[in-house]
Length: 157
Image (tube, rainbow, N blue to C red):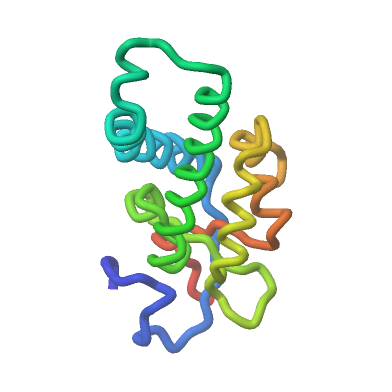
């Protein structure tokens, strides 16, 4: 049972209490996902799309704006694809054993609209560190009525 996803498991007949992910795990999720995002898209962004301009260092203001917008679109796509395909789990959440869930919806897993809104919320300046407050919930959690739970430490009632 240790290696099974507690939410997808049919072996537990007892109710479980889901535990919020710790601030440490949330911070690890942020760092790991950010590193993976940078690694995964840097080469595509820099060389396949803009190649020579970035190497030569010459660019216009409109090209700089386009690069920022393109970067934001890729950032949104990273979370949309990973959390959407893997039912609320980004690569970092796989590593830390955490998952995004709806807080009070019919479906336990967030739909693509919710994931898109969570991802869009992450673009707000300093939002990345909003989970470090007293509640341990980030703005992107509160604004979309979602929670991040620790799958590795459920409490069986």
